[in-house]
Image (tube, rainbow, N blue to C red; front, side, top):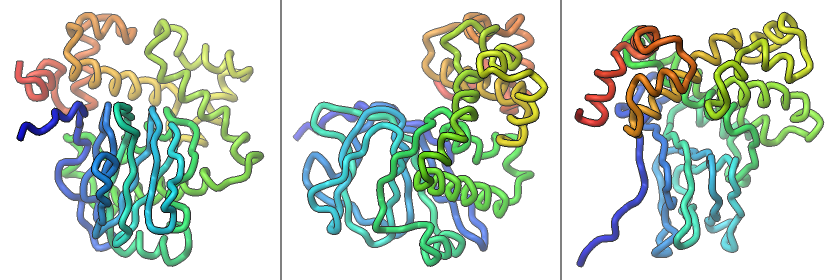
Length: 288
């Protein structure tokens, strides 16, 4: 029997577990055009560890024994999976979604469950601010050239911290969430590669938010732990990775699209960020 072709584009963010006495990050990845698990054949999955997926685009349904009729999973939803809980979660037939996922386990996460922060009764939460949370989640994994120098405990605790922030934001009152809207908006504007590069410069973003540049820079650093210029540069580097992986543009076209003064400057910054040149990355990821 011919098996159906899986249309999902799968990118591993973490190909080997990060193990520590506090806990373990087992795997992580980004699925584009996915369908989820257990939806097409009515089979349920049961994990021995925790997992999450953050739905970036598309929509679907979550089901387990406590929610047999299903919970809606719209875009910008956080879905949590617990050890031993049989579940299915995914899109309806002929529909797809994009999701970022992590698998994890260990004492620090068991304690989060014991304290009620990780709550099996609330497997699905709405969590707006897609670009903001995408940046924070993908920022957990150190770039390849820094992984040997980063203690595993640091990476695991970083993930636990972001996870706690996600849960807190998802359950916060509308008033509390409103106070963070400017941060989400700032991240979206700084990371937007669909507008001319000049429009995403920090001074222009500050103006659009109705703030002076100095006030914006100070508030942004307090909220995000880095200057807006640094955030914007890293966002452009992440966009460059995606564009190189897609293979539709030359490196010169990518550097121009992302607003770098020339291809050589772009290559130098890319190598500083990822430990290899754009050409080397293209060859290792696409084979040419």
